[in-house]
Length: 299
Ligand code: GLU
Image 1 (cartoon, rainbow, N blue to C red):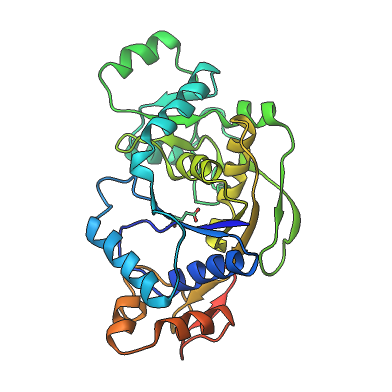
Image 2 (cartoon, rainbow, N blue to C red; image 1 turned 90 degrees about the vertical axis):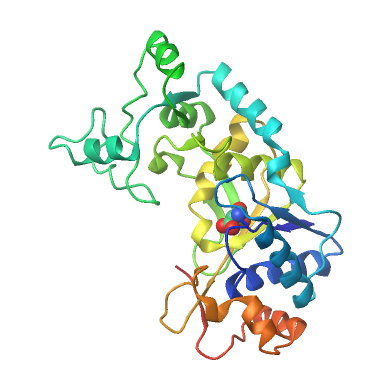
């Protein structure tokens, strides 16, 4: 068994991260497997080295030791570009020149965007789905605009999903939905695989790295279960293995909402400074015993 914890270094780690890291770590250790640490630092504008260092300090304090060197996504840009190139050559991605404002305007137009699926506009798990404005552009138009205009690359979802056919994964997470799950990538619309400001999106980078690292069990928060629809499709398109997934409950604060990086009271650095014991905290979290006021909830 190979598991991983993959924080984005865009803020301090909190109790929710500790729970996720401890689950992944303990699962690997219990199976005599390996636990890897990956720093999801492709977002150059938001990632910070001081957060990377702080994350390593927090994990060490929790008694969570990772095998080998931490993997850095920023060192894998060539692999992301190669996979994107493969999808480009197969006509499965297209350049998109829309700004956020363009997309918002198209979505609010009286008749909706061209080619909208009934009921599909707000059907994306992450909110509104992309209306497909740039999908029908001709090759000549694409070439012309790519020379001048910033653009991202989007997956032609309908085409990709049709090519891949029915896809499933094994879900071992908590609550409902365990067992063999059907991936439904179409509800996400034409997701971004490479951004204007970053060479790969979370979907592409995470899927490629989980495969490259040989991860057998992806253990992460249930907020990411919808993303697995897209990850499963990318695995099929790029001939990558499919790990088992465990999407776990989320740590919620006294207000009942899932923790966010701004919840300073739950930050691990704060708990450490207050004199709490790291390994005891990690063990308590895994056992479902949370500090007063905090709870585990499925979204
Ligand atoms: N880096 C992602 C995050 O911090 C997690 C990625 C994953 O576990 O797939 O939300």
